Structure formats: C-alpha cells, structure tokens
Amino acid sequence: MLGPAIAFWADGHADRRTPIRLLAPAAIAAFIVFFFLAHDFTTLLITGFAALTLMNAIVPLVESAALRATAQGKVSYGFVRGIGSVSFIISNVGGGILIARFGLDAVIVWVLVALSLVVLTAWRALRADPPLAASHALTFAARVQAVRNLLRNKRYLTLIISCGLIQAAHGFYYGFSTLVWRSQGIAPETIGVLWAIGVSVEVAFLWNLRTFERWLSPEALILIGAFGGALRWMLLGFGPTGAVLLPLQTLHAVSFATTHVGAMRLLTREAPENAAAMAQTLYSALSSGLLLGGASLISGILFDASGAHGYWAMSVMAFAGGLIALSLLAPTPRSSSEHR
Image (cartoon, rainbow, N blue to C red):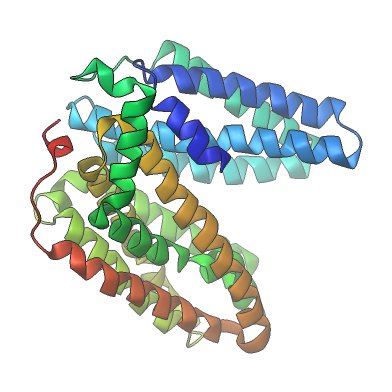
C-alpha cells in the first residue's frame, strides 16, 4: 500500500525530480538508523521496512524519468536500461568481492554509497522536464480521477497482468537455477559464466534496441518475450547440461528484456502524465512483487518435489501471459497521452 501512496504523492509534483531528491536522502537516513541505532526486533522491523520501502519507491520514478527523456529525444532508453543491467553485474560481482574481503559490514558501506550516488545524480545531473500541458492536472482531485481512469483502462490492466505473469515466470530461474546446475555437477565457475551470458546478451539487445524497434511494435516485443520465455522454461525443464545451455541463456534477452521494453513502451502510451508514477509502481508491485513472490514460493515446492521439472510450471505461466497479451493486438483508439 505504501508504494502506490508514494507514487500518488510523486505524481503531484510539477518538478518530477523532487520526489527522487527527497526519497533518496530519506532512504539513507532510514538505513543509518537500521544499521547503527536499531537493536531490538521491533525497531529493526520498522526501520528496515521503511528503508526498503523508500529505496524501492525510487525505482519506478527513475524508470519514468528515463522513459520521459526518451520521449523527448534526450537519450536512448535501451542505452540507459543497458547501463542499469551492467550496474547490476558490477554490484553483484563487486559486492561479493567486498563481502569476501571485509565481511558483512561491507554491505553497509555498499548500500550507503550507492544511495549517496543516487542523491548526487538526482541533484546534479537530472534535468527538469517540460511542465505539464495543464497545471490543474496536478491537483489532488485531478490525480484521483487519473488513477480511477487508469484502473478502468482495460488495456492497461491487460498489460500489467500479462507482463506480470511473463516476468514472474522467472521465479524458478532466479531462485533455483543455480541449485539445479550444482545438482547436475556443473562447476561454480561455469554457473557464473552462464549467468553472465544471460545478462550480457540482455545488454547487447538493449544497446541495439532502436534497430529492433524499427521492425517490432511494443505488442510484438511482449508476445516474443512470452512465447520465447515459454520455450526457454520448457527446454530447461528437461534438465539439459553442456553446450545446449549457452543458447538457452541467450534467450534471457527474449524472456526478460523484450517483455520489459514492450511493457515500458505501452505504459508510457496508456498512462496519463499525472498518473505516470502510479502506473509504473502498480506494474512493478504486481510483476516484481505479488506475482514474482508467489512464483518464487511455488518454485521452492516444485524444486523439492521435482527438481528441474519445476521450470515447466514457469513455462505454463509465461504462455498464459502471452495468451492474455494477444488481446493487446486488438485495435483501439489512441489515448491523448500517446501524443505527449
């Protein structure tokens, strides 16, 4: 509930940089209290919840900022999102090295430094957006009406449900692929290479996104992600080993990246400007929160019961998301937000 509430508050700012500039320092303060001042369970629970809520609320706001910059021709969304994926790799590798060298205390420094960089970037590098066409759109009543219209938009609801299912189908992969590969006797170094291949191909796709988008609509990207993901999970469910894993890992650019890009493009099209943060937050809460969390819980049961065959449930989930997404191909009148 707090995520959508923060998004509603963020949508009320004429300067879209302000929420990020306020949330990042607040997250730092909450983490400082959590790491250094909280000792009993209740205080740890409250401050930890606050810190993670504030930090996670920044993500859809940054995503919205990147999409607005893309729409204004300032930057390539694929390049920005690719940088995010590279940062993810660096964070995982760098964080692992620091923890191995300095212990868990390195996590404290890592989190605080990363959030400090967010603050610095938000204040020094993030440029202001053009003002909304109608200033009255920022009023409380106007934003409430915008959210109501968003939740009545069948195309938006179809989008977040279908893409939520497609992305949540990664639950088994994220949680148990390493355990499956280790049980098959695959060396840890090879497992690291497999993960790196998946993210590297994702980055290559994103950095060449303009080429793909010349030929593929957002709806087509989502469908490719859905049915490509269903194929990937079905084949991984047979427990393959050896060289066949390499092309299956390259499909991460399909199962994740094409779906994500298609979803972001359609979210920009369907969401009114004064509910952009809300649209992003609801999608994130569904795909990365509720559905992915549920898929991860189910994946644990499936892994214990059937090992790699648990991927097949993910294949069904991705396929179901694709079937739902087919309705996005139906012609609909363009919304006014599409002409921003």
